[in-house]
Length: 237
Image (cartoon, rainbow, N blue to C red):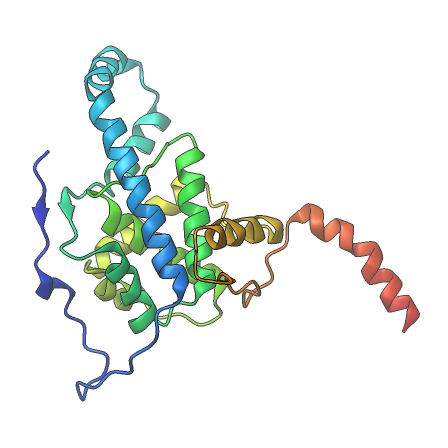
């Protein structure tokens, strides 16, 4: 599939009405995540190129045997495949959300966890250059809504990501269905993704991802395990 590049002015985004902006230092997690995603994209595109012939044969054989649910899932996956590629680096693209939408490091960690779940799920969604813009914008939007108490409107996130508001809202719904609305991230899982990102950094003593998200992220099992401790603490008061 031939891919068209997006023009740079598509991402022109004023911070304020007076034309001024406040420069924010991008968190190191952006550099780490961009590096990881670049590797994933390279691996995924090589795998797609190698398996394209087999995939075409399987599609022809499957045909009418696909269930309605499988057909809908495939349509939702294809919605992210725009056929266009960013005309900027992934680092610059992710940095935009930190600079303009004030996205915190925790949001990037949760967004990465979501992308990993989609990869491991039945839909097998993988990040490639043709879907990176839509997939990352949507993942960051959903993660921001989950992690942070206050968020910008979808139209604002859409402008940061270079999409239309209607397009992003539709993609958000597709994303939620592909995730089966399982957005909770356990505290232990959040910690494991932080450790994974930290291992990718080689800056002297290393870099620690902020591990205290604004919202409590606790598994149901962890909550049950903590109940006796809470009761004991209440009785001691």
